[in-house]
Image 1: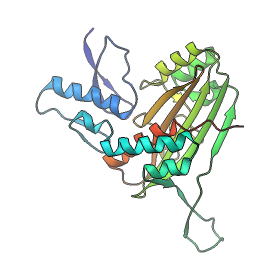
Image 2 (image 1 turned 90 degrees about the horizontal axis):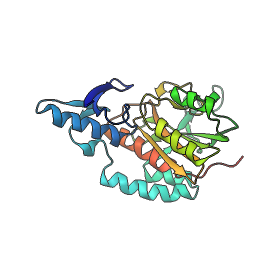
Image 3 (image 1 turned 90 degrees about the vertical axis):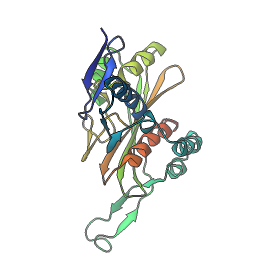
Length: 254
């Protein structure tokens, strides 16, 4: 068996152990760990791309101490349903929008409140893609709730943060679903407003991704996609942090 190279959806190549599941896990920390292992095995002079910059150490794939502190604070607000405060902990704010033509001064920007774009569904196969959709075609979920939160960072980068709550009939279904959806190339639950992984000019690549179990029968998944701007490593780190905070939000009621 041994180790082998795989190509991720964004074109990056990482070395994985084929004695393990054949797809690396989503999220910056998991991918960085695999890529750093590849650099160490390949020897000096080998570099790997990661996000907007080069990958030098595993720390570049994880979160900095300052960002981990911000996540801890943001998660506390999120658990109480304080979305705006949770976002501010990460230096994120509700996305700005333009007033429609003919209303007010042309081109004048205004700040919208965080609008809870929420959707509830009784089944999941219709609102998923890839192997995850195949999973739901034979193992139906009981309930699906989706939420999309558009935000901007302090540099004006526009980011879409998706959160989905999936309820399964049995605990085993949650375990199996998480094992599948956590890995690259398996698809996911479609974010609200997205078509497959695509949303507007952006895409949910799996690099900024977090999942967590909620009780026995529910899985919460959050992903972030860049919609526009000039991202750097700090932006990508903040996107990952946003998913870690978003999974702590309570499921919206109908």
